[in-house]
Length: 135
Image (cartoon, rainbow, N blue to C red; front, side, top):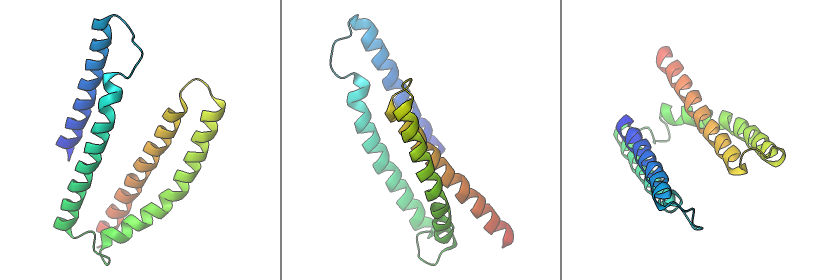
């Protein structure tokens, strides 16, 4: 999983560098989409499909998607606890985006979503560690 993450971050970095170089070489900021804006949706879709395939393979291997598995019940507990945090973060990000004009609104929403995802995985890891230490 670490290798895939490093690969995805590396691809993003290469596209960003290519976009900066293309803008500097042309010498003009022509109106229109940049390389990053054109390629980013393709990477997001491919990354999502790849993450889904990796997740399904891991679930089939560990049998963690079965209804009576410990991992599934822990994930449900972590999701339900994260839901409240996600709602609060979403409202806070919307309020900040509405009143703070320094950064784009999409950035605040992205930060809220990223924090919610991190919150879920931290809660899940803590619950999983507690379950393993009890058994």
